[in-house]
Length: 507
Ligand code: HXC
Image 1 (cartoon, rainbow, N blue to C red):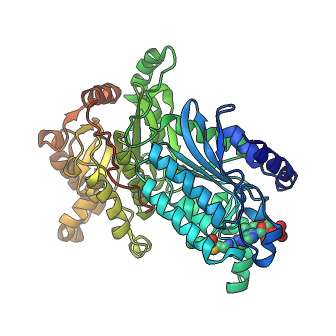
Image 2: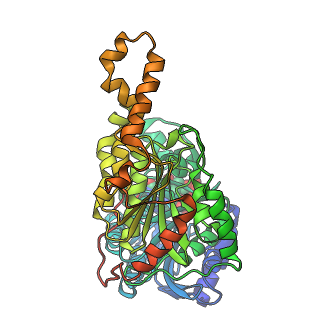
């Protein structure tokens, strides 16, 4: 780190601590390997004199940019310093960010952006807006080429909110993160609404409701540790494979135990809930499943894990939330993740236990057709190796959407508990035998009997495999073995290219 930067940061550290957040210097120390950070543009200042800015020129202009390593792998970074003009972005500040983003693109290394500021610098007018234009354009150019991670490390307004929305993963921190297009004061002035920054755009809002934040952390230390972990497992760019992960000792022995547990994990009652995460953790290396968007649309699980050291993306219905039904939020959540994995040649595993799309006017009016189509589109477009595992129910459109063979799954496996149909047996007979049931003196008994017949005829567990809609029926305990063998057969499958396949556009 340069002396200039160190002095500036030390001068500003008291103010940052008053706001109970780390200084930029401390943040860089948490993210990068020791002494690995090289700063550029440390002397750069703004040239504006408007509205008293002439007396507020700071070396670095409120943003630190440069590169360093995380566990030995190079990463480009920009980090806003709120203690300089509220972290606002003027022309010089923006030019520094443009330069480091261009560097990330040229060198094909991940880009991390720590945001902590008030957006476009009001005194610099259109020059600030143009600066954001250049940042947004670069986020889109980087999209699908290198992983982009944003941290909301303070109040982030306007452009400081839209930049993160264009990156792949957004981290928020309890008590610290706030992000909105316009801050509480402007909201009050324009609409009369009295809101706090936290209720407008705090960590919970974005991790649970808006879907902007992929990860919520309790404090800054945990946040930067988690950022490091994510960088550790991801590939550096679309041109390189993800690092191979080493397993802990005795992993195979404990795997044998896990396989046995798997055989009895699905409840006997087809309506009983269970936690799909348990299935993931029993199958993947060391039980390590890194869940993404844990709190948003929890009826669909997404995340990363390793199988035999190889990074995979996992998507799965969650029967313990809304019985695992898909809705518009879940579809968008899944779609963006599937596209991310495709961008970076990360094989996909999809675990299915889904009773259908959530019915009702709220969903229809909320755009479930349009937004659900995004998940369909994403799966249809991917070219990475992909395995579908049908755990239990797979009904209707939701069966198709969850990476069915029709959409292009390379391998479809089904457990003995699988039930694949246009809809559940009871719902099916109520439509098919509407007239008969109207005249029945024992509706419940008749529905039961007809539903059993329907199940035995078109939903029994070998039905789909006999007709080629499932490649192989397997016991749950065989799942990991099949996936391992599949991954070794497709090891040359992903195409690591100089050019991106496509961007990872915001949903
Ligand atoms: C210049 C700014 C500034 C800005 C804050 N400051 N935002 N200076 N331009 N955009 C300055 C303040 O004047 C103050 O300076 C210091 O930073 C700290 O700000 P405070 O308001 O005291 O801090 P806090 O109470 O924590 O509130 C932080 C805040 C608030 C929520 C970010 O400052 C705020 O709402 N700022 C304006 C946000 C905004 O509307 N930005 C423009 C968005 S439009 P002193 O000298 O008093 O310490 C945009 C264009 C792109 O970004 C849009 C793309 C969609």
